[in-house]
Length: 244
Image 1 (cartoon, rainbow, N blue to C red):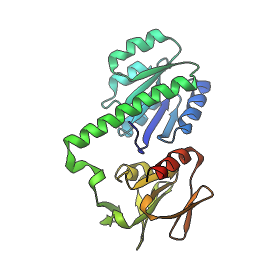
Image 2: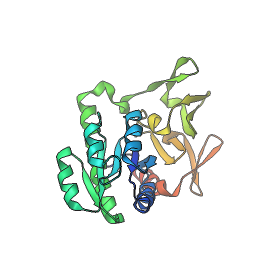
Image 3: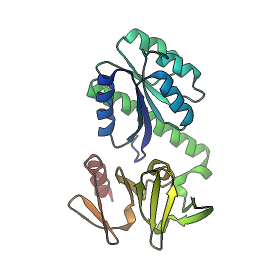
């Protein structure tokens, strides 16, 4: 079940070598947005309590101060979780906590991809099920969105949006008539846009597919702005073009 949606990820592992490998693997997948990479369970718990909208958690089981199992037991809202372990016995016990899968150290890329595919399918299915049960919340049918600019809410007609650009802690929403700077993340904006019309083509850009005037040298031209298509998004983008 393929979607264009990106999912926020947190990695918690006290093993620096394992953490470095997984950081690399995560960055290879355009649907995964690594928000934090942390080295101990207590620090990880603090982060997750402050960011309860995290979609995916890569979690080491054996860590000092607080183990991965202890962390999961106290989380009020558990993300979809992939455990990381050097001993499969621990991972088997952890399935009682409803984790999706586990990786054995050192993590192999093929096994990582299989676990991630499983979790992405699960998230996409849950989103589809929720949309079917709550059609009024289905962003695919949205024609406009409200965003907070300064101290007021502004309605933006999605038909006029050209592209969205990440600017550190803000995003710039460029429309045919104006540019709005909003305190948000690119992922949060992406989740509110219909995937039939909008696609992320770079870590810093979402574009309105209907506004693309030309594609050249792995860049898209929208109005007078040339926006790069990063390597990790090129296959998905060109496959989408071939289906139009």
